[in-house]
Length: 156
Image 1 (tube, rainbow, N blue to C red):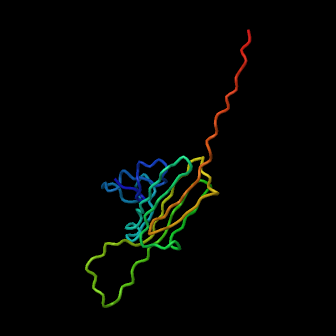
Image 2 (tube, helix red, strand yellow):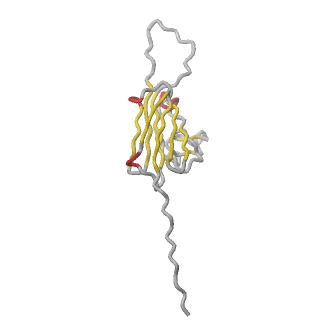
Image 3 (tube, rainbow, N blue to C red):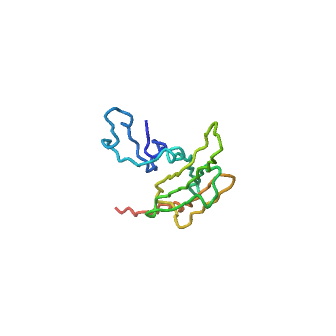
């Protein structure tokens, strides 16, 4: 099972595309049923930035783990009025000629995650903060309108 942008296939609000045929012998990359997003090995390593989305009575809250990144290296944007986009880049560590690496486990590269916001999101009031490598994006919700109930007089 593979996702184009490595996110949860069961997330109904995710814009990521799942290619169920990736890895099969007839999948040559171009013959796939779904469009491919070109990702280099550097990007693929960090592409799966983990993001939680919870809904409270007042807001939708997105929490992203972005350890080692500064707030200047992360972007939070709203596209087309209802798509929350969180992106960023972790630079690769500079290599010196005389350095001998024994293990490289920390990922680097770009990440991009998109979420379709529900209709009750107040996108003009979004707030974002970052502390200790955790990005928190709060999207306030409009208050649920109570349905008007009007009594109808019964005659007869």
